[in-house]
Image (cartoon, rainbow, N blue to C red; front, side):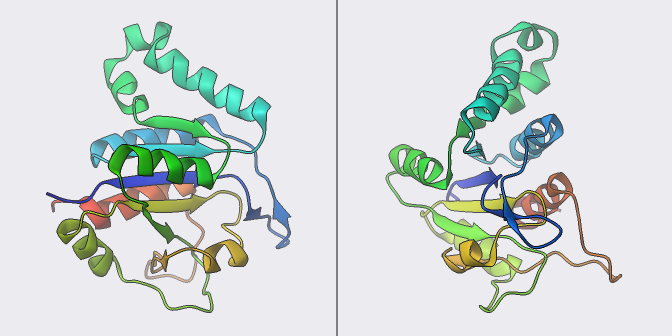
Length: 188
C-alpha cells in the first residue's frame, strides 16, 4: 500500500513577474481542475491555501456549491472531485490536517520551474518513496511565478523541475499539477 499523497496550492509566499513576494488571487479554474486531477490520480486531499479570509470564503462557496449545493445535484463527477478540496489559511494548517488524518507529518515537497541552490529529487525517487513508505507526501504548488526561494529552501525536498524539449518553461499550475501527479502515480 502506498503512502498518501496530498497537494497544496499556495497563494503566498509566491513571486510576481518582477520577482517580488506577493499574494496572488484565487482562480476558479485552479480549484476545479486540480481537484479533478487529484481525484483521477487518487490523491488523498487537495488544499487550497490563501491568507485572505475573503478569498478563503470565496473558495469555500465554490466548494460548497459543488459538494452540497445545486452543483452537487447536477454534476456527480464534479461533486466527487471537489470532495477532496480543503480550504486553509496557510501551509501549517494543511500540515496539521494531514498529521491529524494520518498520524504522520508529511514530507513537504516543493515544486519549481527555476533552479535553486539545493539539489532536486527525481520523480522516480519520490515515486519509490511513496510506494514503499508510510509517510505522506505533500506536493506544494505555487501560483503566480512560483514559490519564493526562501520558502523552497525550508521544504523537506525539492522535486526536479518539469522540462519539455524546448526552452520555454512556464506551465500553468493546473497543467503542472496534472503532469506531476501522472509522474508520481500514473499507471502507464
